[in-house]
Amino acid sequence: MYILGVPRYANTAPLYHFLEEGDGVAFRYGVPTELNRWLLEGSVDLSLVSSYFYLENADRLRPLPDFSVADLGPVYSVNLFHRKPWSELRRIALTTESATSVRLLQYLLEADGLKPQCTPEQGGLELLERYDGVLLIGDRAITTYFGLLSIIPESVHQVPTQVEGIRITDLSMRWFEQTRLPFVFAVWATRKTAPPPPEIVRRLRAARSLGLGNLAAVAGTEAQRLQVPERLMQHYLWNFRYHLEAPDRLGLQAFAQAVGLPYPDDYWDV
Image 1 (cartoon, helix red, strand yellow):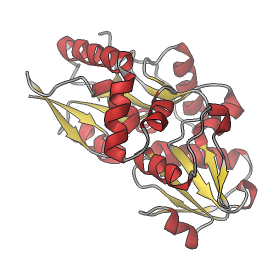
Image 2 (cartoon, one colour):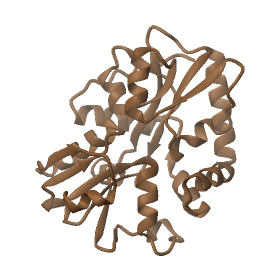
Image 3 (cartoon, one colour):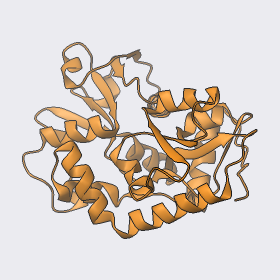
Image 4 (cartoon, one colour):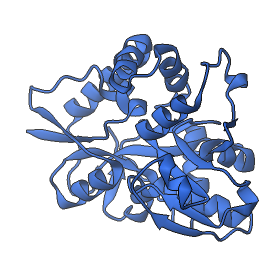
C-alpha cells in the first residue's frame, strides 16, 4: 500500500478530491507539522509538505517537479489577525500547524525592523485578549475570516482588511508587495531514497486536472464541510497555483534566500 500524506485543508482539495483510495493507494490526514514528521519517519511515502520544511531537509527530500500549493497575491488563509497596527505589534500568538507560515511571518516582521515576542498557542481570536496578534492558517483562518464578515464581497477588490476593529494582514499579499513573486506554501515530496512510482504520479496529475476542471464541485464539497458560502469558497480556491511553474520556483528560491537556506532546484524526473 502506497500512503499519501494529505493536509485536510480546503486549498489542497483540488489536488486529491478526484483521487480515490484503493488500487494500492491510501490517505493519511494530518496538519503540515505532522505530515512533515511522518514523511521523514517513513510512515507516509509521498506527502504534501510545507516549503520551509522541504528547504530545511532538502538533503533528504526531493519534490515532484510540477506540483505546488502556491499563490500570487492574497491567499486569504494565512492571516495575522490583530487590533494594533502592524508597526506596534509586541506579542503574537502563533499557529502550531505550520512552520512555513510562522517563518514567513518572522521574515516579514524582521524586514520591517520589528521583533515582537512570538509564542506558539492553540486557539482563535480569543487569544487577542492576551496578545496583540494571532496567526491562523488554513481552514481555521478561512472560517475565522468568514465569521467577521457581514456580507460576502462580490469582487476581489472589495475584500476588507479590517472588520469590527480587527485588522487582517494577509501574509502572502505582504510577500507579494515586497517581492512581486508567488509564495509557495507546499510541495509534494518523497524521501530521496524512495522515488515515487510513475503510476502514482500519473494518478496525481489526472486527479489535479479533474479537480481544476471541476472547481465548482470541489468548492461545493469544501464549503459544505466548513459551513461557509460556496461563492466564498470558489473565490478562495481560484487564487491558487498548483503546477510549480517558473514564477513559483522563483518565489520558492526567493523564500530560501530570505530565510538563509539553500535552494537545491532538485526535482524528481517523473
